Image (cartoon, rainbow, N blue to C red; front, side, top):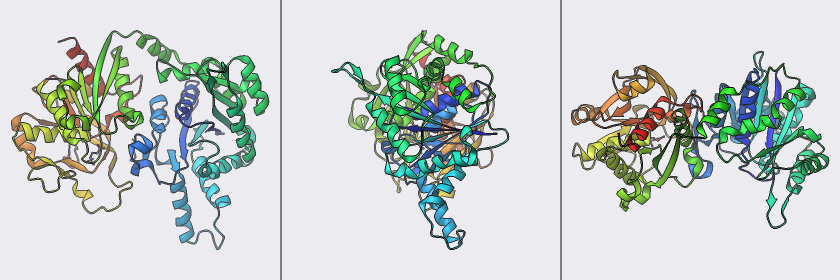
Length: 535
Ligand code: GLN
């Protein structure tokens, strides 16, 4: 019998609901349970694929090509749960299904309404994850309780215990208890209000997870329990983890969250096995090295825009017991600025993905600097395309080489639009998306990182390496070392006459985990360590 956990958030956004949900998923898996995870997002976009990183941070891509919320990145980094298109629903997606059904006449003359038609569609999105091999479905609800657009989702999850049995559903509410320095007091009122709002809708939370800067204390916990109508031991504090987000599940387990959930739902769980996770955290607290990676991007001041990139670099650091520091550099500042000053003291350069012309010239200058000064370089998606443009301009002497994304009439389109993209008008969900196979050239740097020649990686792009320039680039020293076996699209390029210059058309950052870092990130950070030591 599959059980359900619903995670809602209150008081303010950005409380780390995704991290908390992922941590719960991990703890339950580490007690031998089979977990499925999903996120419901109340905004009206059908998926986050059309949103600017300023609005929404990174778009996280799954194997099946789903463009999803970045919280799904936490789910994949923490758990083994299989994710797919079924793991992220938005208001836009729910409504478009309802409207399509209405147009097909499937409602047989009924007036189509939020309750029951929209709420039924939301419930179907949740219950489809049930199955004979699934112990728990964790559904995280985006937004904050009190948002107008979240109401149909709350109403849908309110109804579910009536259908599935109250004993099979658990509501966890994440709130904030701010500490007021002037009053020297932690304040519980916002939490009381937030739970009050939930109860008005008809949802009584079973467990409160309370984010606090300072330990909550017994008195406050008891006060919250009384005013929010929850049991005393069901108020769990989640204090800020200074060192690493990967300590969050350890902290929650210390406060007994996994035991509480298991008892309340009557789950057939084993003992908690977190030794490897704890050992990792204990080891990396005392790093042997420290390296600085320069990340040159277009949305650089927005921390979430390159979330998976930073996480993957951190994981790679873990595997080398190395602290990876980031130097975040706004690409546009390099257009005219002093590259030497910006990049002079970095141990490695990473140029991530992106769209549009702004900042491109700065990225190209940064890559030229890393290539010429023999600084380890890792290019990802747009970063790979910029590396090809840079090489064509500065080594082949094709001074106006460009991507047709930025200069449609360039005389040398070394990056051009994929054939399959040329007739597509719609923007949403139409890129080359999801997992694609790639064959690596034996002896290449990529091949030695992966230790295999057949790989699969996730994609999200419209433009590609132009094969018309392949031979000239090879002759000048830039070698395609990874190609798609089905259509020969170039997926990886390298400059062999360089300590580490690898650029990939795909997004390796979506497949790295703290205990299993991605091989390319591992190789890149290793090269940065060597550079740092002057090897
Ligand atoms: N804008 C480029 C393209 O569409 C790169 C995309 C990306 O970096 N994800 O091909």
